[in-house]
Length: 197
View 1: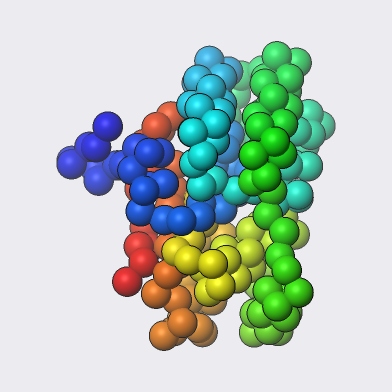
View 2: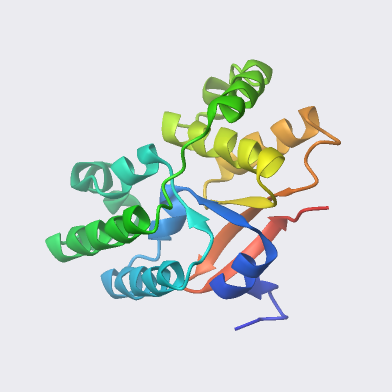
């Protein structure tokens, strides 16, 4: 599914362009406003992971993604609809596939050093951009993975995370050829906002 009009790419296509897709919680949910749409996307993501797709999450993203209270308080007023126990159960199923396929990001000792250096370059990002700790972790991990393991893209619908990505990319100019930023526009439609150079 390639849409030339709006430059949307399928999950399969973006996975072929980047070795690592580092997912933010809001892109997994997609803010589609429909339980059926979310269930369809969960099924698509499970198939992608079961085929060995390069999608990864952090532990904090898993916590957010499976927290019923988090979504009822933060997103239901914004997107409408009712998140049901079925959705939460499906989310847990997807998280189990991430675990089984070892797609929960952890950084090694050397990567931890790089992570700390990047954090030192961006100490006020959480306050400046109003991003949460899980979002900041996704930002840092995206850059660390892109530096050390191969091409990586952060997949997020959070414009504040996108702004912080742009600033950190400017700070690290010349070192970011392997890092991109992608937003999810529909169930299986993604826009690459900042491709690898």
